[in-house]
Length: 98
Image 1: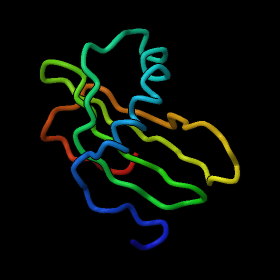
Image 2 (image 1 turned 90 degrees about the vertical axis):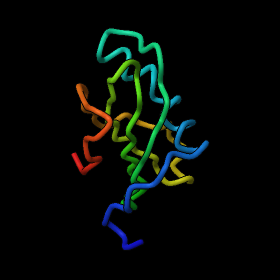
Image 3 (image 1 turned 60 degrees about the horizontal axis):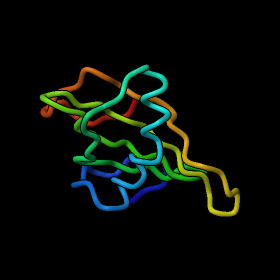
Image 4 (image 1 turned 45 degrees about the horizontal axis):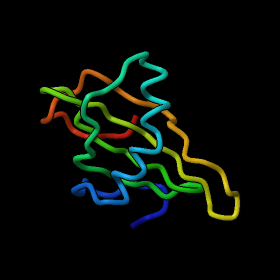
């Protein structure tokens, strides 16, 4: 993968689900709602001064959200950050940079 360029879309892994789970409370707080389902479906990653993860998450019924999560470099020892998100997404919506 080229530094700075997002990867191709890949199926979600256990690590991706763990990252999504760690920022779930941040999203629920910002949206002021609890999601009945929170299952990572697919993701892209982007190497920057750390890693951005773009994760498509199924949140119930036909609803999806797209998350942008920043993971700092290991030596910085910082928690994962929900940098941005998009709601009202559908299963077929492309996971792109935002």
